[in-house]
Image (cartoon, rainbow, N blue to C red):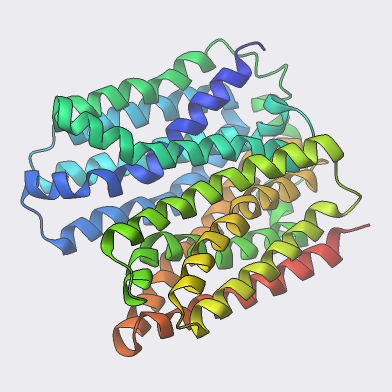
Amino acid sequence: MNLAIPTWIAGLLATGMGVALLGSVKVTLAKRLEMDEARVGGLVSMFGFAMIPVILGMGYLTDLLGPQLVAVTGSVLMAVSLIVLASSSRYWMALLAVLLLSAGWSALINVLNVAMQSAFGGSPTYAMNLGNFFFGLGAFFTPLVIASLLQRTGFARALVVLAAFALLSGVLAMGVDFQALGATGAEGDAAGAATGGIGVLLGLPVMWLCALSLVFYAPLEATMAAWATTYLGDRGLSEKAAAGFLSAFWLAFTASRLATALVVGQFGLPPGGDTMLIVALSGLCLLVWLIVVLTRNSTVAVAMVIAAGLVYGPLFPTLVGALLGNLADYPSLHGRAVGLFFAIGGIGWSIIPMLIGAYAQKRGLQQGFRVAAAAAVGLLVMALALHFTVAP
Protein backbone atom coordinates (compact mmCIF):
# COMPACT_ATOMS: atom_id res chain seq x y z
CA MET A 1 0.00 0.00 0.00
CA ASN A 2 2.90 2.34 0.71
CA LEU A 3 3.91 2.05 -2.94
CA ALA A 4 0.48 3.05 -4.28
CA ILE A 5 1.01 6.81 -4.37
CA PRO A 6 4.56 6.60 -5.87
CA THR A 7 3.20 4.14 -8.46
CA TRP A 8 0.37 6.48 -9.44
CA ILE A 9 2.62 9.54 -9.59
CA ALA A 10 5.18 7.72 -11.76
CA GLY A 11 2.44 6.32 -14.00
CA LEU A 12 0.67 9.65 -14.40
CA LEU A 13 3.92 11.43 -15.23
CA ALA A 14 4.67 8.69 -17.79
CA THR A 15 1.23 8.88 -19.42
CA GLY A 16 1.51 12.67 -19.52
CA MET A 17 4.85 12.16 -21.24
CA GLY A 18 3.13 9.78 -23.68
CA VAL A 19 0.69 12.37 -25.04
CA ALA A 20 3.44 15.00 -25.43
CA LEU A 21 6.14 12.71 -26.79
CA LEU A 22 5.42 12.71 -30.52
CA GLY A 23 5.02 16.46 -30.68
CA SER A 24 8.34 16.85 -28.88
CA VAL A 25 10.38 14.57 -31.16
CA LYS A 26 8.58 14.96 -34.50
CA VAL A 27 11.09 17.45 -35.97
CA THR A 28 14.10 15.31 -35.12
CA LEU A 29 12.29 12.12 -36.16
CA ALA A 30 11.24 13.66 -39.49
CA LYS A 31 14.85 14.51 -40.30
CA ARG A 32 16.05 11.09 -39.15
CA LEU A 33 13.54 9.20 -41.34
CA GLU A 34 13.34 11.85 -44.10
CA MET A 35 9.57 12.17 -43.67
CA ASP A 36 7.35 14.84 -45.13
CA GLU A 37 4.64 16.59 -43.09
CA ALA A 38 1.95 14.19 -44.31
CA ARG A 39 3.78 11.21 -42.83
CA VAL A 40 4.52 13.10 -39.63
CA GLY A 41 0.81 13.88 -39.35
CA GLY A 42 0.05 10.22 -39.97
CA LEU A 43 2.18 9.23 -36.99
CA VAL A 44 0.51 11.77 -34.73
CA SER A 45 -2.98 10.72 -35.87
CA MET A 46 -2.16 7.04 -35.44
CA PHE A 47 -1.85 7.44 -31.69
CA GLY A 48 -5.37 8.83 -31.33
CA PHE A 49 -7.04 6.50 -33.82
CA ALA A 50 -5.41 3.40 -32.34
CA MET A 51 -6.38 4.46 -28.84
CA ILE A 52 -10.13 4.24 -29.57
CA PRO A 53 -10.40 0.43 -29.90
CA VAL A 54 -7.33 -0.39 -27.80
CA ILE A 55 -8.42 1.41 -24.63
CA LEU A 56 -11.80 -0.34 -24.72
CA GLY A 57 -9.98 -3.67 -24.91
CA MET A 58 -7.73 -2.65 -22.04
CA GLY A 59 -10.84 -1.89 -20.00
CA TYR A 60 -12.00 -5.48 -20.49
CA LEU A 61 -8.57 -6.78 -19.45
CA THR A 62 -8.49 -4.56 -16.35
CA ASP A 63 -11.79 -6.07 -15.17
CA LEU A 64 -11.02 -9.62 -16.34
CA LEU A 65 -7.35 -10.10 -15.39
CA GLY A 66 -6.97 -7.49 -12.69
CA PRO A 67 -5.38 -4.04 -12.76
CA GLN A 68 -1.92 -5.08 -11.58
CA LEU A 69 -1.13 -7.19 -14.65
CA VAL A 70 -2.54 -4.55 -16.99
CA ALA A 71 -0.57 -1.76 -15.31
CA VAL A 72 2.71 -3.67 -15.52
CA THR A 73 2.01 -4.66 -19.14
CA GLY A 74 1.18 -1.07 -20.06
CA SER A 75 4.40 0.20 -18.53
CA VAL A 76 6.44 -2.43 -20.37
CA LEU A 77 4.71 -1.69 -23.69
CA MET A 78 5.44 2.04 -23.33
CA ALA A 79 9.10 1.28 -22.63
CA VAL A 80 9.33 -1.11 -25.59
CA SER A 81 7.67 1.43 -27.88
CA LEU A 82 10.32 4.01 -27.03
CA ILE A 83 13.11 1.50 -27.68
CA VAL A 84 11.57 0.66 -31.07
CA LEU A 85 11.23 4.37 -31.89
CA ALA A 86 14.83 4.97 -30.84
CA SER A 87 16.03 2.30 -33.27
CA SER A 88 13.66 3.21 -36.12
CA SER A 89 15.27 3.49 -39.50
CA ARG A 90 12.10 3.06 -41.56
CA TYR A 91 8.67 4.66 -41.44
CA TRP A 92 6.94 1.35 -40.71
CA MET A 93 9.10 0.94 -37.60
CA ALA A 94 7.99 4.35 -36.37
CA LEU A 95 4.35 3.37 -37.02
CA LEU A 96 4.86 0.17 -35.03
CA ALA A 97 6.39 2.20 -32.19
CA VAL A 98 3.37 4.53 -32.14
CA LEU A 99 0.95 1.57 -32.06
CA LEU A 100 2.85 0.07 -29.12
CA LEU A 101 2.91 3.46 -27.41
CA SER A 102 -0.85 3.82 -27.84
CA ALA A 103 -1.45 0.31 -26.48
CA GLY A 104 0.82 0.83 -23.46
CA TRP A 105 -0.62 4.28 -22.74
CA SER A 106 -4.18 2.94 -22.99
CA ALA A 107 -3.46 0.10 -20.57
CA LEU A 108 -1.77 2.31 -18.01
CA ILE A 109 -4.24 5.20 -18.19
CA ASN A 110 -7.16 2.80 -17.75
CA VAL A 111 -5.80 1.33 -14.53
CA LEU A 112 -4.69 4.70 -13.17
CA ASN A 113 -8.16 6.18 -13.62
CA VAL A 114 -10.03 3.14 -12.31
CA ALA A 115 -8.22 3.14 -8.95
CA MET A 116 -7.30 6.84 -8.70
CA GLN A 117 -9.62 7.48 -5.77
CA SER A 118 -8.34 4.40 -3.96
CA ALA A 119 -4.74 5.55 -4.39
CA PHE A 120 -5.13 9.21 -3.41
CA GLY A 121 -8.19 8.99 -1.14
CA GLY A 122 -10.88 11.64 -0.73
CA SER A 123 -13.79 12.24 -3.09
CA PRO A 124 -13.67 11.31 -6.79
CA THR A 125 -13.37 14.99 -7.76
CA TYR A 126 -10.44 15.50 -5.37
CA ALA A 127 -8.59 12.33 -6.39
CA MET A 128 -9.06 12.80 -10.14
CA ASN A 129 -7.92 16.43 -10.09
CA LEU A 130 -4.90 15.65 -7.92
CA GLY A 131 -3.92 12.70 -10.09
CA ASN A 132 -4.37 14.58 -13.33
CA PHE A 133 -2.23 17.39 -11.94
CA PHE A 134 0.70 14.96 -12.14
CA PHE A 135 -0.43 13.93 -15.64
CA GLY A 136 -0.31 17.60 -16.65
CA LEU A 137 3.17 17.97 -15.17
CA GLY A 138 4.36 15.07 -17.29
CA ALA A 139 2.94 16.64 -20.45
CA PHE A 140 4.34 20.08 -19.57
CA PHE A 141 7.89 19.02 -18.76
CA THR A 142 8.32 16.42 -21.52
CA PRO A 143 9.21 18.91 -24.31
CA LEU A 144 11.72 20.61 -21.99
CA VAL A 145 13.31 17.33 -20.88
CA ILE A 146 13.46 15.95 -24.43
CA ALA A 147 15.04 19.15 -25.78
CA SER A 148 17.74 18.91 -23.11
CA LEU A 149 18.34 15.19 -23.67
CA LEU A 150 18.49 15.56 -27.46
CA GLN A 151 21.15 18.21 -27.11
CA ARG A 152 23.21 16.22 -24.61
CA THR A 153 22.80 12.57 -25.61
CA GLY A 154 21.27 12.41 -29.10
CA PHE A 155 17.97 10.94 -30.27
CA ALA A 156 18.40 7.23 -29.52
CA ARG A 157 19.89 7.62 -26.06
CA ALA A 158 17.32 10.24 -25.11
CA LEU A 159 14.49 7.80 -25.86
CA VAL A 160 16.23 5.02 -23.95
CA VAL A 161 16.32 7.30 -20.88
CA LEU A 162 12.59 7.97 -21.29
CA ALA A 163 11.95 4.24 -21.74
CA ALA A 164 13.61 3.56 -18.39
CA PHE A 165 11.36 6.16 -16.78
CA ALA A 166 8.26 4.66 -18.44
CA LEU A 167 9.20 1.30 -16.91
CA LEU A 168 9.35 2.74 -13.38
CA SER A 169 5.61 2.67 -12.72
CA GLY A 170 5.44 -0.99 -13.80
CA VAL A 171 8.24 -1.94 -11.44
CA LEU A 172 6.55 -0.10 -8.57
CA ALA A 173 3.16 -1.61 -9.45
CA MET A 174 4.50 -5.10 -8.80
CA GLY A 175 4.81 -4.15 -5.13
CA VAL A 176 1.31 -2.65 -4.78
CA ASP A 177 -1.48 -4.59 -3.07
CA PHE A 178 -4.23 -3.87 -5.60
CA GLN A 179 -6.75 -5.96 -3.71
CA ALA A 180 -6.32 -3.68 -0.70
CA LEU A 181 -6.95 -0.75 -3.06
CA GLY A 182 -10.36 -2.20 -3.84
CA ALA A 183 -9.45 -3.68 -7.23
CA THR A 184 -11.57 -6.75 -7.99
CA GLY A 185 -9.92 -8.41 -10.97
CA ALA A 186 -11.22 -11.70 -12.28
CA GLU A 187 -13.41 -12.48 -9.24
CA GLY A 188 -15.17 -9.12 -9.46
CA ASP A 189 -15.64 -9.62 -13.17
CA ALA A 190 -17.83 -12.61 -12.49
CA ALA A 191 -20.27 -10.27 -10.78
CA GLY A 192 -20.05 -7.88 -13.71
CA ALA A 193 -20.71 -10.69 -16.17
CA ALA A 194 -23.67 -11.86 -14.12
CA THR A 195 -25.32 -8.46 -14.41
CA GLY A 196 -24.72 -8.21 -18.15
CA GLY A 197 -21.22 -6.80 -18.39
CA ILE A 198 -20.81 -3.88 -20.78
CA GLY A 199 -24.48 -4.12 -21.71
CA VAL A 200 -25.27 -2.69 -18.29
CA LEU A 201 -23.04 0.31 -19.00
CA LEU A 202 -24.65 0.92 -22.37
CA GLY A 203 -28.02 1.03 -20.65
CA LEU A 204 -27.00 3.68 -18.11
CA PRO A 205 -27.69 7.33 -19.02
CA VAL A 206 -24.72 8.52 -16.92
CA MET A 207 -22.36 6.45 -19.09
CA TRP A 208 -23.63 8.01 -22.31
CA LEU A 209 -23.81 11.56 -20.95
CA CYS A 210 -20.26 11.47 -19.61
CA ALA A 211 -18.89 9.90 -22.80
CA LEU A 212 -20.73 12.38 -25.04
CA SER A 213 -19.44 15.21 -22.87
CA LEU A 214 -15.93 13.96 -23.66
CA VAL A 215 -16.82 13.83 -27.37
CA PHE A 216 -17.31 17.60 -27.25
CA TYR A 217 -14.64 18.46 -24.66
CA ALA A 218 -11.59 16.51 -25.88
CA PRO A 219 -11.32 18.28 -29.26
CA LEU A 220 -11.56 21.69 -27.55
CA GLU A 221 -8.46 20.93 -25.50
CA ALA A 222 -6.67 19.54 -28.56
CA THR A 223 -7.68 22.56 -30.66
CA MET A 224 -6.31 25.14 -28.26
CA ALA A 225 -3.10 23.14 -27.80
CA ALA A 226 -2.58 22.78 -31.56
CA TRP A 227 -3.60 26.24 -32.81
CA ALA A 228 -2.99 28.68 -29.96
CA THR A 229 0.34 29.87 -31.39
CA THR A 230 -1.14 30.33 -34.88
CA TYR A 231 -4.15 32.16 -33.45
CA LEU A 232 -1.97 34.52 -31.41
CA GLY A 233 0.32 35.03 -34.41
CA ASP A 234 -2.68 36.13 -36.44
CA ARG A 235 -3.41 38.68 -33.70
CA GLY A 236 0.05 40.20 -34.23
CA LEU A 237 2.19 38.43 -31.61
CA SER A 238 5.68 37.24 -32.45
CA GLU A 239 6.41 33.53 -32.71
CA LYS A 240 8.42 33.62 -29.47
CA ALA A 241 5.67 35.46 -27.57
CA ALA A 242 3.00 33.09 -28.89
CA ALA A 243 5.03 30.08 -27.79
CA GLY A 244 5.45 31.63 -24.36
CA PHE A 245 1.70 32.11 -23.98
CA LEU A 246 1.11 28.50 -25.07
CA SER A 247 3.34 27.50 -22.14
CA ALA A 248 1.24 29.79 -19.96
CA PHE A 249 -1.86 27.93 -21.18
CA TRP A 250 -0.39 24.61 -20.02
CA LEU A 251 0.75 26.08 -16.71
CA ALA A 252 -2.74 27.44 -16.05
CA PHE A 253 -4.20 24.09 -17.14
CA THR A 254 -2.02 22.15 -14.69
CA ALA A 255 -2.24 24.62 -11.79
CA SER A 256 -6.05 24.76 -11.94
CA ARG A 257 -6.19 20.99 -11.39
CA LEU A 258 -4.05 21.26 -8.27
CA ALA A 259 -6.06 24.25 -7.03
CA THR A 260 -9.34 22.37 -7.55
CA ALA A 261 -8.01 19.33 -5.69
CA LEU A 262 -6.83 21.46 -2.77
CA VAL A 263 -10.09 23.41 -2.51
CA VAL A 264 -12.28 20.30 -2.79
CA GLY A 265 -10.04 18.42 -0.38
CA GLN A 266 -10.29 21.24 2.16
CA PHE A 267 -13.94 22.24 1.83
CA GLY A 268 -15.58 19.35 0.00
CA LEU A 269 -18.53 19.59 -2.39
CA PRO A 270 -22.26 19.57 -1.62
CA PRO A 271 -24.43 16.76 -3.07
CA GLY A 272 -24.46 17.17 -6.83
CA GLY A 273 -21.54 19.60 -6.59
CA ASP A 274 -19.36 17.65 -9.01
CA THR A 275 -21.86 17.84 -11.87
CA MET A 276 -22.67 21.46 -11.02
CA LEU A 277 -18.95 22.21 -11.32
CA ILE A 278 -18.93 20.53 -14.74
CA VAL A 279 -21.87 22.73 -15.81
CA ALA A 280 -20.13 25.90 -14.61
CA LEU A 281 -16.85 25.00 -16.34
CA SER A 282 -18.72 24.10 -19.54
CA GLY A 283 -20.48 27.47 -19.52
CA LEU A 284 -17.16 29.26 -19.07
CA CYS A 285 -15.69 27.16 -21.86
CA LEU A 286 -18.43 28.35 -24.22
CA LEU A 287 -17.87 31.96 -23.16
CA VAL A 288 -14.13 31.66 -23.86
CA TRP A 289 -14.71 30.30 -27.36
CA LEU A 290 -17.31 32.93 -28.23
CA ILE A 291 -14.84 35.66 -27.27
CA VAL A 292 -12.06 33.89 -29.22
CA VAL A 293 -14.26 33.88 -32.33
CA LEU A 294 -15.34 37.51 -31.98
CA THR A 295 -12.34 39.43 -30.63
CA ARG A 296 -9.76 41.25 -32.73
CA ASN A 297 -7.83 42.54 -29.73
CA SER A 298 -4.47 40.87 -29.09
CA THR A 299 -4.61 41.41 -25.32
CA VAL A 300 -8.04 39.81 -25.10
CA ALA A 301 -6.83 36.95 -27.30
CA VAL A 302 -3.93 36.26 -24.91
CA ALA A 303 -6.27 36.42 -21.93
CA MET A 304 -8.61 33.88 -23.55
CA VAL A 305 -5.78 31.42 -24.21
CA ILE A 306 -4.80 31.52 -20.54
CA ALA A 307 -8.45 31.49 -19.43
CA ALA A 308 -8.97 28.36 -21.53
CA GLY A 309 -6.20 26.64 -19.55
CA LEU A 310 -7.82 27.58 -16.25
CA VAL A 311 -11.23 26.30 -17.39
CA TYR A 312 -10.04 23.15 -19.13
CA GLY A 313 -7.80 21.92 -16.31
CA PRO A 314 -10.45 20.63 -13.87
CA LEU A 315 -13.09 19.73 -16.46
CA PHE A 316 -11.81 16.35 -17.61
CA PRO A 317 -10.85 14.93 -14.18
CA THR A 318 -14.12 16.11 -12.64
CA LEU A 319 -15.99 14.44 -15.50
CA VAL A 320 -14.19 11.10 -14.92
CA GLY A 321 -14.81 11.42 -11.20
CA ALA A 322 -18.52 11.99 -11.83
CA LEU A 323 -18.63 8.91 -14.07
CA LEU A 324 -16.99 6.52 -11.62
CA GLY A 325 -18.68 8.10 -8.62
CA ASN A 326 -22.06 7.38 -10.17
CA LEU A 327 -21.02 3.81 -11.00
CA ALA A 328 -20.12 2.96 -7.41
CA ASP A 329 -22.62 0.06 -7.52
CA TYR A 330 -20.70 -1.51 -10.43
CA PRO A 331 -17.05 -1.70 -9.25
CA SER A 332 -16.30 -4.73 -11.43
CA LEU A 333 -17.23 -2.70 -14.53
CA HIS A 334 -15.03 0.31 -13.88
CA GLY A 335 -12.30 -0.79 -16.28
CA ARG A 336 -14.81 -1.16 -19.09
CA ALA A 337 -16.50 2.10 -18.12
CA VAL A 338 -13.24 4.02 -18.44
CA GLY A 339 -12.43 2.22 -21.69
CA LEU A 340 -15.85 3.00 -23.16
CA PHE A 341 -15.60 6.60 -21.95
CA PHE A 342 -12.30 7.14 -23.79
CA ALA A 343 -13.35 5.14 -26.85
CA ILE A 344 -16.51 7.17 -27.44
CA GLY A 345 -14.79 10.44 -26.52
CA GLY A 346 -11.96 9.65 -28.91
CA ILE A 347 -14.37 9.99 -31.84
CA GLY A 348 -14.75 13.70 -31.18
CA TRP A 349 -11.03 13.98 -30.46
CA SER A 350 -10.29 12.60 -33.93
CA ILE A 351 -13.02 14.21 -36.06
CA ILE A 352 -13.76 17.71 -34.73
CA PRO A 353 -10.20 19.12 -35.07
CA MET A 354 -10.24 17.93 -38.70
CA LEU A 355 -13.48 19.84 -39.26
CA ILE A 356 -11.94 22.94 -37.68
CA GLY A 357 -8.91 22.61 -39.93
CA ALA A 358 -11.02 22.18 -43.05
CA TYR A 359 -13.23 25.18 -42.19
CA ALA A 360 -10.19 27.28 -41.30
CA GLN A 361 -8.58 26.51 -44.64
CA LYS A 362 -11.57 28.07 -46.41
CA ARG A 363 -12.53 30.90 -44.06
CA GLY A 364 -9.48 31.51 -41.86
CA LEU A 365 -8.54 30.12 -38.44
CA GLN A 366 -10.63 32.49 -36.35
CA GLN A 367 -13.73 31.60 -38.32
CA GLY A 368 -12.75 27.95 -38.09
CA PHE A 369 -13.06 28.29 -34.34
CA ARG A 370 -16.82 28.61 -34.86
CA VAL A 371 -16.76 24.80 -34.99
CA ALA A 372 -15.07 24.79 -31.57
CA ALA A 373 -17.73 27.16 -30.24
CA ALA A 374 -20.42 24.81 -31.55
CA ALA A 375 -18.69 21.91 -29.78
CA ALA A 376 -18.69 23.99 -26.59
CA VAL A 377 -22.47 24.36 -26.94
CA GLY A 378 -22.72 20.59 -27.21
CA LEU A 379 -20.58 20.21 -24.10
CA LEU A 380 -22.81 22.57 -22.10
CA VAL A 381 -25.96 20.72 -23.20
CA MET A 382 -24.47 17.36 -22.16
CA ALA A 383 -23.27 18.82 -18.85
CA LEU A 384 -26.73 20.16 -18.02
CA ALA A 385 -28.33 16.82 -18.95
CA LEU A 386 -25.80 15.01 -16.76
CA HIS A 387 -26.45 17.28 -13.80
CA PHE A 388 -30.23 16.97 -13.93
CA THR A 389 -29.96 13.20 -14.48
CA VAL A 390 -27.73 12.31 -11.51
CA ALA A 391 -27.99 15.23 -9.08
CA PRO A 392 -30.05 14.48 -5.94
